Length: 123
Image 1 (tube, rainbow, N blue to C red):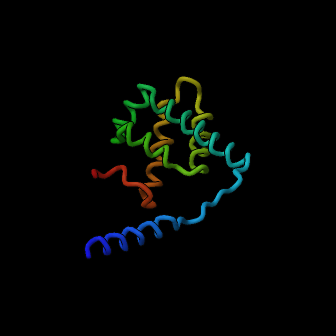
Image 2 (image 1 turned 135 degrees about the vertical axis):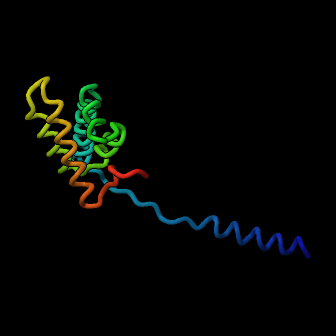
Image 3 (image 1 turned 30 degrees about the vertical axis):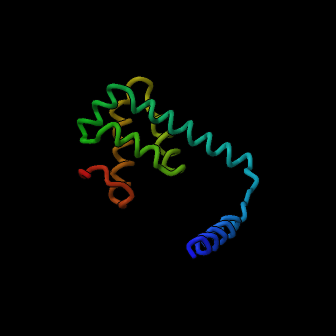
């Protein structure tokens, strides 16, 4: 009695185990690969600027934890990354820590006001 139920159950499991959804694949264009690499390079460039000690101190003075700022930079869209990187590149060499913090602060403030992030409130 039990062996018949067990065999029926096992047969049913084996039948359903062989039904797999079809796999799909697509060709990845060179442009897609390059855009991912460009995004990673932009994020690395901005995060290296945020890792400077004077920038970290200025972020803390403005109430932003450096780790939160770096996490938010990683979640920015490509357009926001390009804008932030453009602002950083336009700063004078070696003297733009405050301007960098200001640029990051403005971007984070805009994201906070639009409801995209919740960086200025405790979790």
